[in-house]
Image (cartoon, rainbow, N blue to C red; front, side):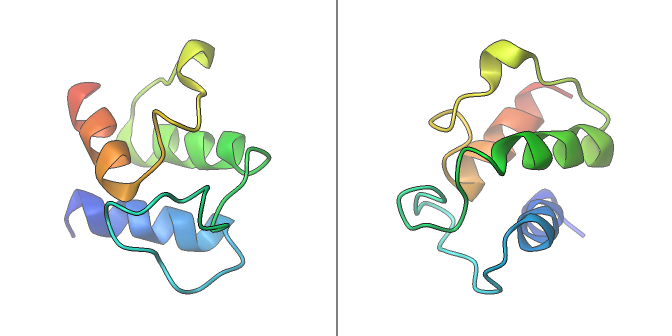
Length: 77
C-alpha cells in the first residue's frame, strides 16, 4: 500500500464522509475535515508513519490536501 492509500484510510476513518476529494482539493474548504478533526488526523499520521508532528505544524494549510499531507510525511521520515 502506498502512502496516499494509507493517508486516505486515515482520512476516511476520521471523516464521516466516505467520498475522498481529489488529491489536490482542499480537505477543509470542501467540508471533508474541519479544524476539530485535525488533531485526530495528526495523531493517526504520527502512529501510521512513525513521525512526530510538532504543534507548530498543526496548521490546516500545511495539511490541506492529500498531496500536501503526503509531501509532509515524506519530508519528516
